[in-house]
Length: 171
Length: 152
Image (tube, rainbow over all chains, first blue to last red; front, side, top):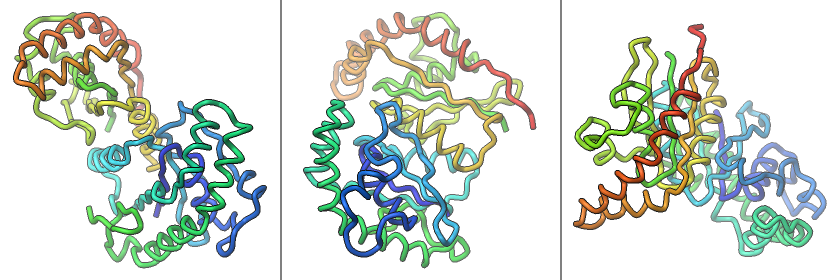
């Protein structure tokens, strides 16, 4: 199974979720500031990377974990994947798509904009990291929901795949 | 099966025009009766962010078109990386991003064509835009669409 965490820029909430899922950030409690800021790919992508599905690693159950920034077009991500599955005969039950944008708070939005869009990293990165610390509990819960969903939706059971981890949509 | 995928991020689905030039369904130089072709009809009737199968070349290459009103870069990156992550052999497909300079005129033309009852004005605007951009489209098809892909 492939799990794709997505958010606006693919630089903060989805990266944090992927690293929690992979066990690289604590699954209980809150990490230290430097643990968050030092994550692989955290606050690191460029505008040209929008839409690139990036492999983050493989979890203990063998699921492949990916992240993607899809700007303000979550529906585009779903549509493109559905279309390509049809044309290239990809198993539609092999993907779980998780929207992390609900977890993004105002500090993350402003900090992310300053750092990624305006290039003001020295101001933006501390702000977005602080915002991510505040949002950590919510991200943790959503990753937990995703893991539960993965356990109950093994391909052999025929459960659906495109999901926000809150509402599952059968294809 | 070998596939060429045209992607565009414009209100008017230029990927369909590029794909149709590739298939030689329409000429590679601009012509006025564009709207009466299948290409024109597809563009007026289809939502293309899930892609549209345009046809096959005599050599057996499938041609697909994806289009979205904005975020062309996101679209082409998504298509490229999704296929790679799904284990599709890179030698069997090619993603061609159709770039759209000056697409504000195109957006206005598309808006007039689809949202207002003055379709003729919208068509005229799009026609004039297409006339300007057509050489770029034909060049994109020639440079990026013609490629050697392995049969293996």
